[in-house]
Image (spheres, rainbow, N blue to C red):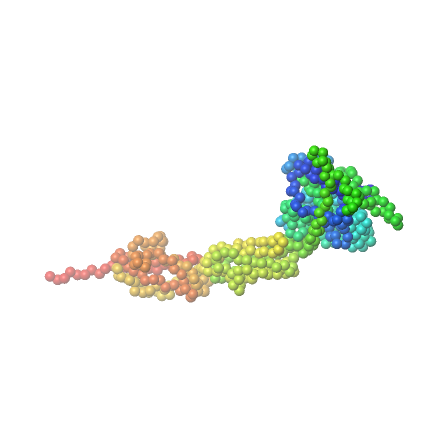
Length: 569
């Protein structure tokens, strides 16, 4: 274990020279990673020479030591060749053990299914896995992805590290006094208790299993509504894992390196860091050992800082002092983080104008772990010009999700105008999730229309038909109110083209009309305007067709003019 510790760097013990080397390596590799965002300094920037850590630290690793080896200056391959290179091809450092690589990619797919907005790249998990454990000690895992012996960090006893007293009774780290970071992704037990996953389906959440640990790391990095395609969110995610600027730069360097190209190598054959990054532990009073702290910059009044790297032209500049910044805000646990919003079984949303929709819009909220999320406000909004509203006459309603994660909107009442509209469900505040449903209102329909009397309709040429025509439309036996009806005067109902002679209606100017658009009243009744005959005798037909396809044909007769006998001589 001492040899393992010597290969890792205690948080707060790195110098700015290490940061400069990290930046130089990143630049030399020509890596395409997004730049560090301004102010991404982490939570370790205290007064010069100070130590971070203590009970208030909430990083996933407890700010444990980590490997600081930087990627090779030569990139593994051109962009785009990423992970399909054959085994044992390319730079050895670009090789990732088969089971470890499979775990990272599986975690990316799983998170993409429950939190696609996070856009987690597996190369980020690979970078953290490289820095935290050298890819599970070069991929030394069994067939299930579990390390043969636990990978443990030093006791977080406050002596050069954070002070975190035991939280698991030694169940994971074998230490009942202080916590230690555990497993390939180096979770402290208290963090694992919240974020632990069972990704390999063996019924256990094991921090020593690369599949479980990789998925837990992915969900942890995505917490708080982060979008890891955004540089600032990615920086915050990495700093939440270990609150150190040097850690961020080192992870960023490996992330960019793996984005340039990787290949698979057999389990157990991965490359481990070769340069010890932690001083040999020294004996302290009482017989215990603790890492020897690296020299801190001198306090005011002491020795001046040693010169930094030479400037172009031979000058020197002092090593810059870190700028104190507040630690990152704690991220909520996955059980309290909205992961997704999905359809909870809502069927087609269609109703007749003025009617009530049979289906009600229903969604199911899930947290970042994929479990149903209760007590979450979900807002439903109607958008469109059909006049459709929720019960109670509202366009927007908010519903609290139930224990099974479902939230169901009130019934929808269709407006009087036919057409399409949408209902949108929205939940969450940091990064809202939305789900949109298409809906439509169809015009009122009638499946039957009949005359209310059977009188023959006869008129003399140029005269008005004496009897008014009244009809009634019904739908499934009930009066069909507000149904559109088209009335057309034709010569032959089998060829219902508008006639150019015979009976007609009149417009406001008294000109003949032979087609009218009409509508039934509240009782389903339709009274036609007056009909007039022209000078062309014969038998004609009036065809009335409803929205919904019901049709009735009414016969109209224009009598021939009576012949008048000539006067006797």
